[in-house]
Length: 262
Image (cartoon, rainbow, N blue to C red; front, top):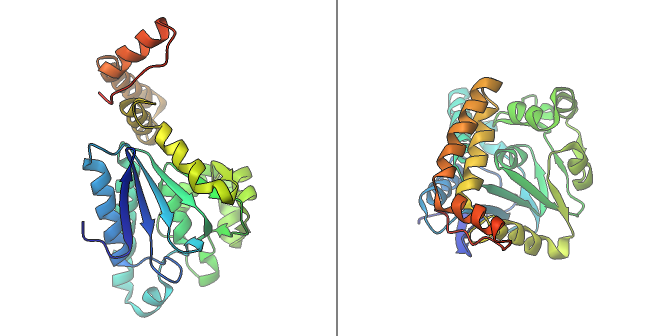
């Protein structure tokens, strides 16, 4: 796969995608194109159940959009750029495989917007800044931030964070519900990959994991009645699969199940 700013490695059914665009993993159309290619590869790879996004840069996960690009491009280009970014992140969000942001550095602006489009966010316990400071540039978080942050932390907290441009520490981000785990930095990648591998088969049913993601993501955008209907439909599909039969049988036999992703 031809990539410029990301690399992709597959290990134990986990895809590890590494951002590498010095000095701060700022994104432009080319990086977003790479991100789209990685998402497609994860979607169609039968040997991948989970994808983890890391950074090759020490102390930086992503500082967001390339400000030089935004400052020098036309309003028409900026509009299409934001649309393209939103579409790319939407594609990741609806892919029925978990994506994990492994944040080992500063994660601000559009960087946090990318992270919020993943399903889980783990961060190392370092001196990092986490936030959406776009208001200090006279603009708003335009890569999904105004929509995803309220869904994570609630309306009032989200508005507070965005209108002030306030930065959070990793522990504050955990308290706010922006990240799911804070790991010691010396064990960060080890702990993150262990979590990711546990979501793959034979440890877990990758089919069930994917169905849970789809039910949550799609269900949140519907009424309770429609969401429950989707939940039943997905559950009935899982009932007919080999993994569910193995799970039930293992429970009755008081043993650990061995899933096959089928």
